[in-house]
Amino acid sequence: MRSRKKNWLTVQQTAAELDSTSAEVCRLLKLRRLTGKKQKDPRRAGKAQWLVNPVSIAAERRRHPERWRKVRPRLMLY
Image 1 (cartoon, rainbow, N blue to C red):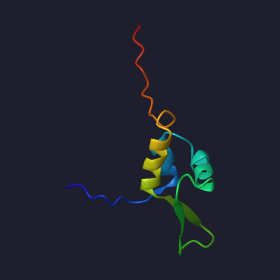
Image 2 (cartoon, rainbow, N blue to C red; image 1 turned 135 degrees about the vertical axis):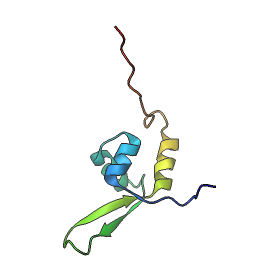
Image 3 (cartoon, rainbow, N blue to C red; image 1 turned 180 degrees about the vertical axis):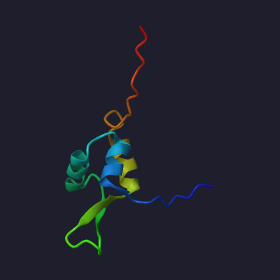
């Protein structure tokens, strides 16, 4: 049985999941359409990264399914 608990994704991983850019994911975080938290790296002063909740990613996909649909490239046979 699969676990319902998923790991939080970085902004770059979320962008790949949504087939978007990291700037777009940051914009969605700012608009609170994605939920996230900031994780600080104790080894590197002043460096932190955003982690995005996978539940909010699924909710955003349900909110706009046509926008986040992954488009597969079609093969052009000549």
